[in-house]
Image (cartoon, rainbow over all chains, first blue to last red; front, top):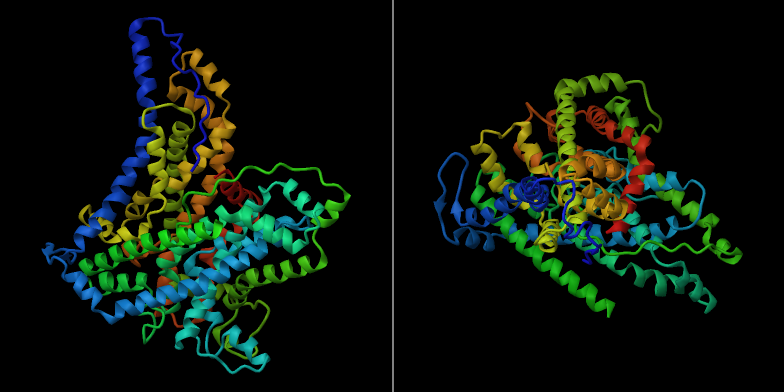
Length: 317
Length: 295
């Protein structure tokens, strides 16, 4: 991150208007300490409600812990339980598949959409605002609406499929169909937002580059391949990382799609790691195990982000 | 959803005045309009479906083909939804939570953003790097200790348990810093200093007025995020004292088997955001683009 270093005002000139030495000293103390006071609320609040819970999660994961009772030391027992639990591997796999099903189409569509939005056109504001409306909709509202649309007997999706001659699909009870339906919710909510991020990146690519490419006889597609995509590389990396972190924590969509139950369908066919953690901690009351799931998820996210960054960097060179 | 972390650096566009050839090249053709209209339709149709389903009895929605126009039952469906979940209380609670969170986030982020943008102090770059790094940490992974902490403080189930962890946001610090680096001229700060103004005085009478447009965008984004916050409120709050999202989760959890009533409740809970969008959509879009570019 390039931190822009601007010349800082008033560097080391004695503050005038400070008549007496006593006032001058006070002025200097204020000037020196004020910046820390300004940034302190952020760091204190983060330490209390961000850092402490995260670190404490690792500690709790080594214990048996239920609300209202004392923590009991277990050592690595929770981890042994987790790593020998088929439900954990199921949740891990579903998180991965739903993550791929939702992230890849979402970012590809967003890129295409940004390309369209980049043209000069009428109704620009209308298109941009309508693209971002789903982003403003809450997870709960979106999932409730899509749960209806993907209903087996009266869902609008099955009705449309029926028109083209496809038999009604039991979206919720199927394995891949449920994952697909949940992915559609994610894609619907996030594509427009990512398109705006890409659009911002496209707008910052110098027009000269396109002009030069056009003079060299590059076609539209060649311009997109050789000017737009390289220019967007940092932006794409950013959206990939954000989407990966989001996908690994997927929770609200599958919870509401399953009618508020954290089991992710009768066969756990859409139980994500987030649902699995919630189930352990708040359905079964085993907060120690929930903390173990959380901590393992955190480590996985770190690995995933590093891998993604590495891949994107390699592509770049 | 925390889609906030270090934004990629991009430099603002240098707009070259388009010549005839380029202008033709640059404007949308019919195919672009068709594709955009189809996309807009797909993005907006779930909202329309929500209105149709919320305004008809469930029996009609279960017909094939389903009705495609709104019906007359909106009010009775809303009444049933309100009967099942205290949606009035949920709206009030969400307004309180989002209001407090927004006010606090905007103020604290502007303070910190000002310090990082324009004040010189030891450890500034290191502290700013740490602040950026915190955006990478997924907040939902600390819920177990957070839950225990709130229970120990006697705050579980209280609105304050939702408000406290959201009082400030790393994204906001970053956003306001980027805004003030560009918007706040150093000469003004120098002048204030020559006049002997303390930095707090400078903040109140010079920084705040200049920061206002950036603060407005941050306020809109923060309010939206707080209103839609799902994971932590579902864990810490219960159905007797819900926010809108908690009430919607309960509504969808089988307390009411009537899907039209569920859609009516969803419509009421989503309406405030939709209204804000119809009024300020252009500014919000501008804010998201600006936030991405300035990063």
